[in-house]
Image (cartoon, rainbow, N blue to C red; front, side):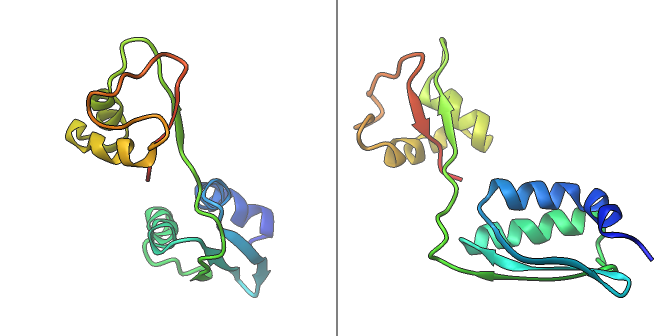
Length: 131
């Protein structure tokens, strides 16, 4: 029977994702021959991403009992990016989304710093980059 440490090693990327995306874990223990993971995610997207990470490790997750609810009172994580020399909104959007034309999402997430596509960014500026 696997130990909790063995399960933590196997599902390390899931646990890392959970920690970095404000997923609350209420239970993480071994029950019989399964890892039991119960908690809540701030959004459905994050909950689905937890499941995608689980399926990338074990598509049938035969040794896992996982229940992740959605709790909108949990704050969603905020991803930020510090502008470097040579950056543009297009380049930043391309880096994070794989599509530079999505730069308006970055503008919308930073109303105090960016007004429109003509807004100037400078090295050292810290921008919120929505998931």
